[in-house]
Length: 66
Image 1 (cartoon, one colour):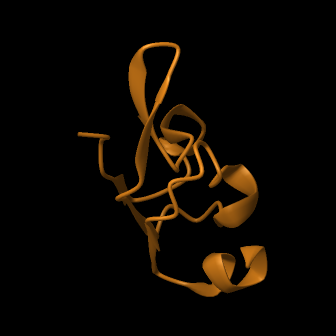
Image 2 (cartoon, helix red, strand yellow):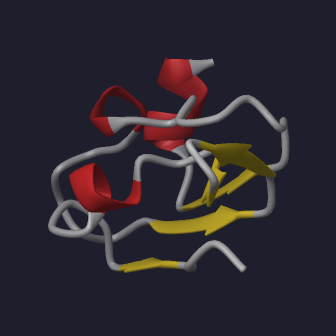
């Protein structure tokens, strides 16, 4: 799954597995778009499938968790 995501220009994660997508899923060329559709609660906060803070500087664009 990681190699497929690294080869993709757009990654859409809708698994519901919190913080599944991390820096190992993306390239470092800042050309990918990551869309986080999955959502859950962790310590009373809404979090998604993507570790957003880890990926902010590695991708072109990333969606926030609703």
